Length: 319
Image (cartoon, rainbow, N blue to C red; front, side, top):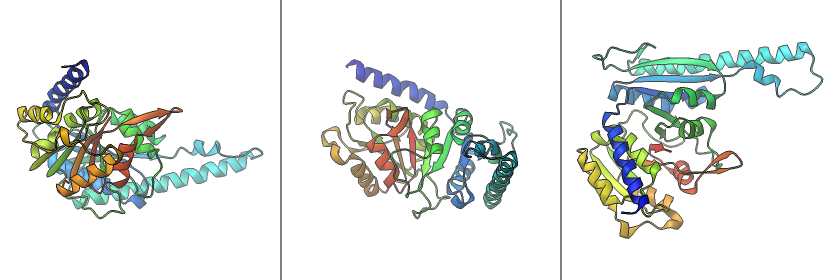
C-alpha cells in the first residue's frame, strides 16, 4: 500500500471512529430574507424532530454603521444620521420578519422554542432564534464550529463560481458538515425524510472521507446506501470496495453502483454523478467539497460547482 493509500485509509478509520460517537444534537441554520420562506429552516426542524436535536436559527442583522462606509464625500452629519437611522429601521424590520418565519415554522411542527439545553433524558426537539449584528460569514464561522450540522440553501439563479457568503463560510470556515437543500425554484418537500436512499460520491479523497464520517447518523438510518466511485485525482486513495468493507464494520450495508474499472467520464463527472443518482432514486448525495484558492477568494472546483448548481436533491458536503 502506497503512502497516499495509507493516508487515505487512516483518515477513513479515524473519521469513522469519530462518526460512531457523532450525534446530531445542535443544528445551525443561517437565516436571510423573509423571501426565502426558509425551506432550509423547515428541513432543519424536520431533522431536529428526527434526531431529537436543537435548531439554532441565526439571523445576521445589518450594522447601521456599515452603511456609512458606502456614503460619498460631502455628506453632512445630519445626512449620515438619517442614513444610519434608515438602515437601523430596515435591519429591525428584517429581523422581525425572519423571527416571524421562525415562529410559524416551529408552531407548524410543534417544536418548543427555548435557548436552554434539555436534560440528557429529554430527546424532544427544540429551537431558538438569535438576531446578531455582524457580517454573516463571520457569524456563521463562529457559531458553526460548535454545531453538529449546518443547513443551508442556494438559489438556482446564482451560477457564479463564488458561493453565497453564508454557504461558503459554512463549508470553508467551520470544519463541520453542511446540508444543502434544493432551492425554492425546485419542487421538493422540505419536511420529507432526508436520506432514505443515500449515495456516496467516492474518489478516495480526504474531503470525501470527512463527508462519509459526518454522514454516519444518516447512513445508519438509510434503507439503501450506494457507493458511486468516480476516480479523480486521488487514484491511490481507498477504492469503493474498501469503503464498502469499512461501512460493513459499522453495520452499514452498501452496494457499489460504479466499480473502479467503470469510472465515470472525467469530462462530465458532475453530470454523470447526478444522472446515476437519479437512476438510483437517491434523496441524499454525500460528497467532499473541492476548492481552489485564487486571489484569496474561494473558487469552488468544477465538480462541486456543477453539483451545487444542478442537483435537485439535498447534498451533504464536507471540506
